[in-house]
Every structure is written in C-alpha cells, then in structure tokens.
Image (tube, rainbow, N blue to C red):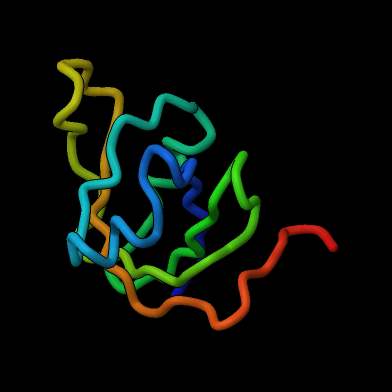
Amino acid sequence: MAYWLAKSEPSTYSWDDLVKEKQTCWSGIRNYAARIHMRNMKKGDEVFFYHSNEGVEIVGIAKVIKEAYPDPTTDDDRWVAVDLKPVKKLKSPKALMQ
C-alpha cells in the first residue's frame, strides 16, 4: 500500500465536504506531477487530506476507492481523476512542517 497527499483549499472543498458526500471524484487536477502520482494510485491506498492556503494542515485520512480514469471535467484524455472516500478525521490536525 502507498500513501499519498491530496490538497484542497477548505473554502473550495473541505474535509467536511468529503465526509458529508461520503465519497468524491478527485478531478480537475491540472498539475503534471500530480497527474503522474494519480495514475499510480491503487485501490486501497491511503491519502492524507491536506487543507492548503487556509489551515495548512493534514486534517484527515481518505482512501482510494477507484483507480485513475479519464477526468470527467475535460475532453482532454491526458488528465485523470480518482475516487476517494473518507476514512477518519485526525483528532489533532498535523502541519507538514513544524
């Protein structure tokens, strides 16, 4: 099993949004390095859910429930999405650097 980092600004999509929805299509990522990593994500891999810009800390752990597939937010087949579901909220959020 591998471990990954998914980041989102909480004002756009927060950990609480993921918990409320119970799962999500992690799409719309247009970063080449992230695309490589998303293609390598396997079902069951764990993902540290990171709030960027606001809060700047890991707030929960999610799991990959569907491996890379064509990103439904674009017609460009170079981009991929994965599906994630929440596993647990951290009792104490963790900064990447302390």
